[in-house]
Length: 313
Image (cartoon, rainbow, N blue to C red; front, side, top):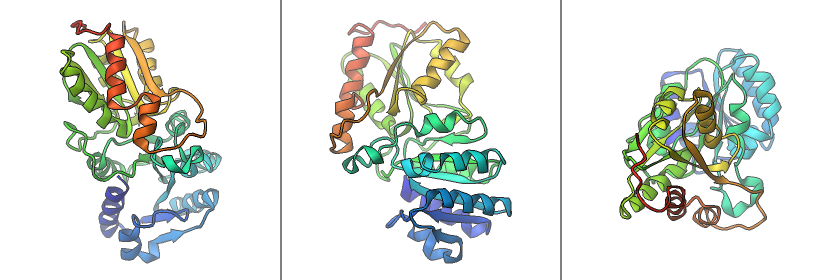
């Protein structure tokens, strides 16, 4: 997704001189298209993320549209107070770009995992929060939101190859995208785990279970109407996210079920414990934490009693 971001932002910047890109000494082999095309609008502030937010806030106050880029933990958590007190409270168009959401930087260890970023950003009503599922949706989401009023947080992955089947790059702010129909169980996913959810639905089909898959990339504003409309059709819904179980898509779905008074059981599939120091590939950690396609399919079978129950009403 980071490659799609850099290419799209470079294209947008060619038509709008207000766009700046700042990085916290990261983005090598990704941000070069922008840096080479617009060296006077590209700033490497070094390992100084709080200062980077401060500079971006000043640029936004002066009429520019600054994008700040770093790994999720350094983009969203280290300068969090600066984001709140600057762009959010002053309603300025600073774009915070966090790369490597979830456990994409798996081999770097727990300090590089982005497991709470959506939660801490979504709690602030004054910031738009977007977590695309693949690189095609990243481009669509960026083109739809780059010049909107107020701050935006983009949670991006590193993968520029995997395409979520059925999504076709679709994105609309405040809406959700249904990528697979089904009548027995629903999986609601956020971010790149959507590809695992789609594969899980295929595996369930081979066992006679009809599984629908919904992608939510617009976390704030949330797609409340879309969620309520589809959740009321199912008695069992799984949520899938490379995030802690609190604050992300699991929390959002639970909020909608509670506030709308829906008769729906929510099973949250997420990172449910503090990392213990074990590292490995993203695929290994997904399997270990119950987020792989096989694990999601098994959890769905367990949740509906192991057979297709035709639970849709």
